[in-house]
Length: 153
Image 1 (spheres, rainbow, N blue to C red):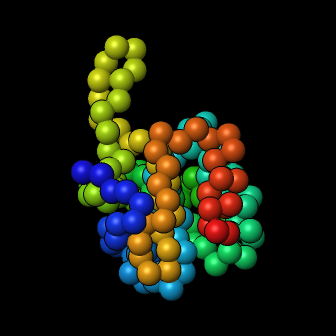
Image 2: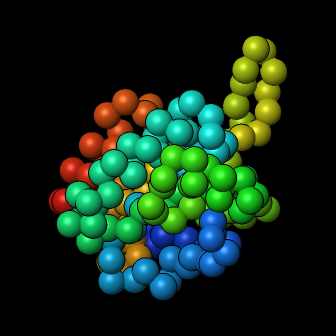
């Protein structure tokens, strides 16, 4: 399954670091940046998350919430958040339902072996819950700046 700009963003309700839940429906009226990353506290995921964190004041000025989603358990997300001082929502999609509905669960290949994993992907969702922009196969350098520019619109 895949979703594209112009389509309604698939709703979700997921447990978060800190013991709460986040629901896309609860954020209607604001822009939302949802980014899927393969694994907390790995080099690329850390760099991407810290980049979003550093730009939080700019995203807030654009009235955009940030949600990072991985299949990591909540306890691992809490350690990741605390280790790097991340100030935005980290959500656990342990069963992979949300990752699949956004088309971010893909076949990957490493050292000649195929496996399923999260495709580093980012989605900009408008105030009405429509996908405004989609980035797939994200390369971390320059990505946060590109998402911020789009959120500022």
